[in-house]
Image (tube, rainbow, N blue to C red):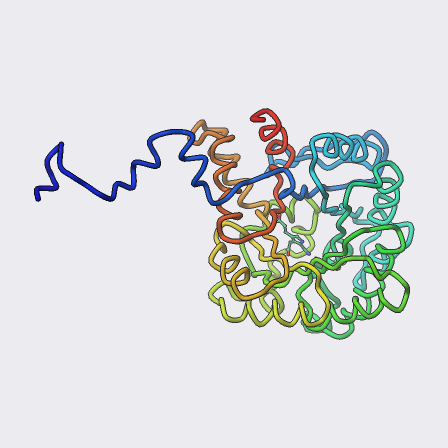
Length: 337
Ligand code: PBG
């Protein structure tokens, strides 16, 4: 049988199913929907304030009133949840981050405003000290600058409780201290916040893709030449990610996260195959910046590239994605219907 001729007989032709739109649709394994999206937002003090972020074109820091308007739009578009990041004024930053658990802090007030206006929108808060410390680290440090684990966990518990008290639906520890999920879970149970969910940044890598975020929350200047290698994971490791995820689940995490996203889809896949707990991934600020920069140069087509990137997260096994593109994506998906 000659198989290289034009009219050769090929029993198996993988292209057959690709030849019509209907059959492509029928065999599609993965879908991206608005239900998969979590929108990270930056909140600032003041009223009617909006600030652009140079390294994140299209993303703005918003004061609480404007954030509520933005959130209303997200609800209309069907986005299930937002992840809130406060931009703390330098004047309230201290070496021991007391502002982190101030019941009247910016994050706590933002949560109250959002839950009052839009009770159906899931509000996720970040549990870590970096927006509140003068040194920009996620935890408390000793004289040598080393981030202290157990002391940090103690105050992270206070921070998480203040978020729950304000009405946060989900607290998301992004600090990478050992034992913090267990400590937070126990405190939530004891204080009666039994339905407050924990989304653990379980496999969070010491990545260079967080640069624009650190500009956005203003922790870059504080951190200076500092780094987070003593608590965030080494980018070379995968087995360690499974250990971290396993521990967080044992300690009471309802959802786990892999971060960054696109360069770490192998980790998403391994976590999804190894555990039944829903796994989320964070398409972080640097990933957003890369795509935006290429789009601004007309080197990539935004909508197609963003949708493809998010579909890839789903294909890898993510239950959902934190992405700065969430609002655009929700709009595009609505238009497609
Ligand atoms: C800090 C935190 C970071 C991000 C989310 N929470 C930065 C860091 O660890 O330095 C990064 C998110 C992004 O880059 O979009 N607790």
